[in-house]
Image (cartoon, rainbow, N blue to C red; front, side, top):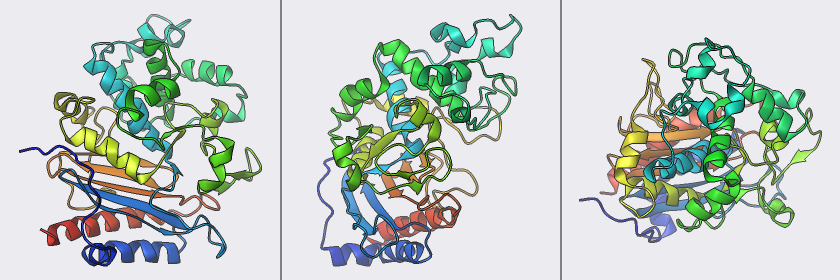
Length: 372
């Protein structure tokens, strides 16, 4: 029997919770000590109950730096792809306003304008974009040459495919930039406005959105000291350079959120709710082609090895964020785990997060198993 998410507070005292999840705390403490990240917030949802919501560390490695709290808002980077863009696509499909097998050029005519009839770009569908199998390149540094949102979008629409649609899986930021514009074309609204009204507000995600106000920026951990593109501290504004040129609102990056809010959208994926129906979740959670790809529609699924660790079932969906954030949802066990960090502070060189994520997820799942 599936239980409705009640979002009660975590059971037991802090000492009791740290006892169950002691190993997880130890892993995060050691990660801070080894400068994997200066601070983190994290949460666990199991069968509709928040089992853990806590934080460790500071905004930076300075002793006087602000302490991270469970409510701290982070730049969640590519979690934007699932919490905003994919969630929007799910709702629009559910409402009969979007068909994932529709060709991209039918929604964004500029994508195919001037291309020859034989150009494989004409065969790219929204499903290809969601599954990262469109043939578009993975990362393109548009920001180095494009200085306005209009010119960046135009450059993205003119990209040449590097493979036939459906034949190669390559994680593509340009694909999700275009998906963000698809959502806007279908809804007739800016992505931030539509997702705020149709997704975040109904779920009670009051801290989630794009482009934080200037007044709130100092309450958000900085992501880096940008020595190249902007030449200044990046705090409370999107770290991703392409998203910055796009005005902070994009399909691939730009969202800010906190642990509690990410747990709320996780619950909507696990439980029957007025917002997202179980059949929609099942459709978007199915792995897509080509063979060997772990990608579902918008979501990723556990690979081997996986950042989700050893215990998340094949019926799990999740995503990572470049800034050091992650979300994994086990649809079978009804468990969601959120980890938000600013691992790119003060720069992007450290990759230690790759070892921390699976170890943390394993420790959390072991703590849950031991508590039942």
